[in-house]
Length: 162
Image (tube, rainbow, N blue to C red; front, side, top):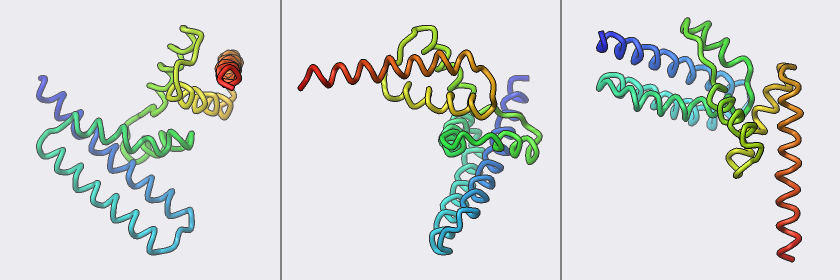
């Protein structure tokens, strides 16, 4: 049974990865890059597909998950709300690329403090996400207050150094 579940997860990740690469290539193509630049980018992603097949063949689920995390950084940083729908349409699988960021932001809210630049970046993405979706306005307000506190702390620290 465990082998069947692993095989399913391998196939799921492979399908999602291929669809993610197709999505990225389509997005890059829509940016009207010079043909040479686009071909270089497309070639890079075609090679990524070969690596995905290699990872799949050796049953490297960890490698596929790691690669998916890297590739989904593109739509995450853009706060791309169409990505998940595209993946579901192409593969039949649902994916929430913002899930781990939401968890990180919940931790920030619980601690009532932004600890570092990574948390700051995560928080900015989630604020953008929530504002685009017009949901969680109370969380947006809390997060914006945490931003103000964070920048006030930096401003104070910088003025002390001078």
